[in-house]
Length: 267
Image (cartoon, rainbow, N blue to C red; front, top):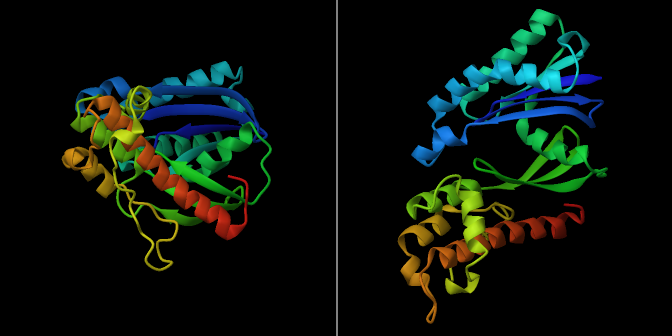
């Protein structure tokens, strides 16, 4: 079975053709990063307009690279949530219309499930396992019971980790997207230069697997001097290294807690 899948949830227009849920016949991604860099973040209006402009040529390119015609496609899939509303509507409407016009089955996809299933394209992973989703908009720890059965154990109570990276990068004028830039600078910094706080949400079991990045973001942006250790310099490299390590510690501590509590060793 050959499925043509469309993704437009944020700032990338993408289309792939996958055979039998495993074999990637084509994967075309048109990135909008140059159009959002000047604003140091994704502008929803620009994103949706670019999706509308690019979606047809991206789909055509995916079919061409798969060496298939639309007649040879068995089903159409598209992201229907979560994401930027205007951006989602472009891909969802295009996918549904294409399926209707060609009389093919249409499959609406929660792209959180899509992220999890992506690992199965290159590995045979037995269920259940603990899944970790970290991106610009999501920080989720989940128990994955089946290919379409995801049980959320914990998530962020405020900002996502990706948003925190972008905001820190924006404040210090490092550029966009923040994640890759901070990671690069951190390689030449010392994570011990700052003692940024790891958020504690341990009161009761309600937030046992939840994370928080708003306080860390505020500490790095507005209170960095308070956490600078004696003998270290306040350089961008040191700030990035300490921030990144603290953010990762926050995620990993909750992730390992979920592993211990569930007894599931596969992550």
